[in-house]
Image (spheres, rainbow, N blue to C red):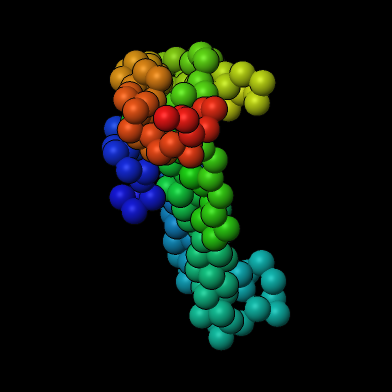
Length: 197
């Protein structure tokens, strides 16, 4: 992140989305191996042979391998995929802008300059209120509204944004220095051209 900062810009905080989106992937990570172990024990006891007469004892390793492989496939396709998506989604607040980064294999991001933010709002569902999270909407005027979804400790994060907006230098342009003494300008750049002396 340091190499992507503008001159004089500092990182204030970095956060991820609320971890409640990981509830079902974590539950699956616990339940699926337990179900696979139960199915393997059921196979070892010889129950498949009682269900279908054509299944012999030689099938046992193959059936167990199929149970373990199916459990691993579900864990990779569901739990790991959602964990990686959550881990890759970050909100970065710097002294000059807000950056949202997302995507595991194909990366994306968007940035909002703090200078363009007119107002900062919070929306919370009942579940989000109980978990101290919420959605932050940034009104950027004619360009629209940007939304930071499921921000943890949403009130504190909004406070950081408002403090950073208050700390912005008044009347300065970030890309360069503001000259206060216009006599330092070269003659070609002065309005009206060269003085005739």
